Length: 489
Ligand SMILES: Cc1ncc(COP(=O)(O)O)c(C=O)c1O
Image 1 (cartoon, protein in one colour):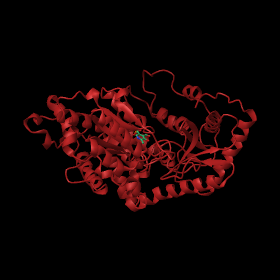
Image 2 (cartoon, protein in one colour):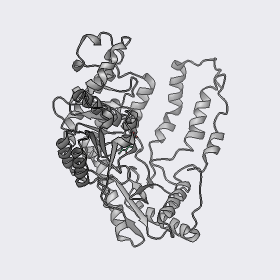
Image 3 (cartoon, protein in one colour):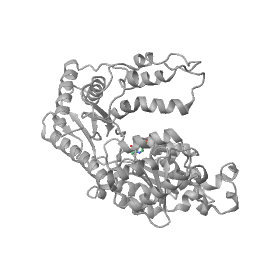
Image 4 (cartoon, helix red, strand yellow):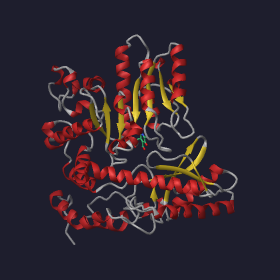
């Protein structure tokens, strides 16, 4: 047992812990089988933790035992073959190394002198990404702490540009069009920007979940006819609920008729750019005024790792760079030059402190190559298509729509009298049990089971296993036909 001083020195203890835990951490990268998660509920897990903030160090053994006895036993492994969970895949091996390097050094991406490798590498990766997405000469891409921050920054830029171009108009009189299945972060961003729900016009979606371009066209014409200014249109490329992709060419054309900013939430679907045969779903993305993409979704990069692409770099400068006049402690002398010449990454982002996400993208790209990542995405898409085909061919189930990407929504045809309540209960029961993990989503007012393919361990044979598990659970639901309330999920 090591004798601990009151305050352990990181130099000694860090190396000791990394060596002691290297195998344990490496094992998290392996696929798992058996139960999908711990059998304990939230309270029981809390009971395993150190009850009070300790006054004195509990020593390195406390970290080791936490990892081996508590953490490792109570995660839900996203590497299980029957894991069809949220948009947060198991991270790839490159992310593990990047997170270790970030954790060990905390290197900053704000200004070059404080983080030479991080700032240089980030700029390098940015130029890779601009090329990958065919962005024009004066465009830019910036890393954000998540997709929601990316959407917020985009809409802030839209607002600032609108106010500059229309000094006599009150921003509160404007309208923003958002698809009714758009991710909630768009409306949240609108509220943070000081606008209210009355500024938002929800555009209906079609039966397959795609926002209706013809409905948008009509709504925009009606608003224009009333003389109401239109600030922005938000399209979605890969909706959270069912993975539907909006028609970006039509959206661009409609935005041009009213001078609106077009933002595309491609947080999920931006990864289609990496797969030639899926790239058609995001055709026209580079013509948007801005778009968001999360490598921490379908690039298997650990979070946070999100990007905001801006068609015109100056729009982002206008929104952000001018606020930095008082930051002489980090950016001395920036007031002496025009904001268009912003060069430090701090001048391109909402957050002062950001994760060094570019490192994860860089290491991912050099470890797997574009082809390797494309292959992985393609295999998830293929599995999603196979599940959809299996559902469509099976009299026990009903398919929502053929998947564009990697999300399949479906229902069991017999879950008792109330279809939505029955499926909600079914999903909750499955989440508590340990055989598979599925999510769900309300679409067109009805609740559907939602399977998202991200796990490298999933095989075609797992599809029939999933359907049989769901079918067995449906018979339990039918048998009771009075949904029980299950807590703790
Ligand atoms: C379509 C879409 N947009 C935005 C977001 C928000 O992204 P983040 O979780 O990175 O903030 C999500 C998250 O799941 C999403 O699915």
